[in-house]
Length: 255
Image 1: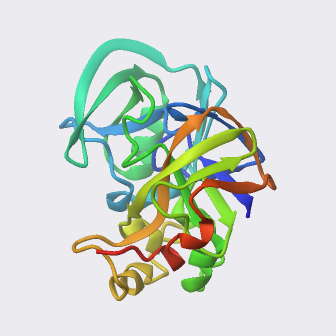
Image 2: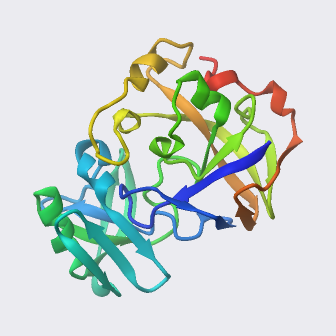
Image 3: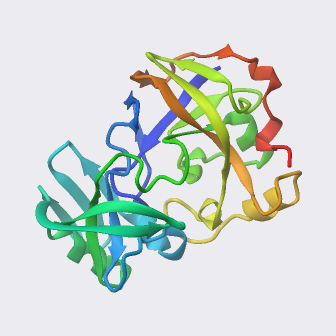
């Protein structure tokens, strides 16, 4: 097994940028989903499934300067200022602690989305991450969907492997070690073209026809970081605990 793709975005919902390497800390990938957008009229984190034009937004962050661009709206590159306003926002039924930022990014993104939004920074890593901080898809699972674009699944790592690693499996990759937690429930975003934001696949329907837990449409797995370190594209991946061959084929999990 080895890593074939690494990706993340500093702004939740924005285009999933491909990286040559990423640093994993105990809380997750450095620079992943540091910022998000909040609805202007209520404390809800904007969902990509309801705002597919977010997939057209390019975002980069160097630890201080946030650069955001959208088609026809230009680019804003500046250090987001603090407002002192903090809020607890709803994120898929749980609380996310955020700080509202003062910057021109929100105006640009609001024009692009056609709605007023506020830019927020997460108070802690993982506040707007659905499950465990690291996500993994395998080439075998992608092949089972006849899907050549791993980008649409927005995983931290794509791994060349014959099976998905089973929950509890410990994986050494590059200088880091992670433990697989569970399968990842999926939404309509995986059916959207990552370059246009338009519906162009029926992957959810395919997943619905497979053996699965009641009410869930899983694809890929998430993982917690046990040992921080840097992971690079091409790094080998080794199952240190449990056998990779005991994993679930093509992201099928038992009910």
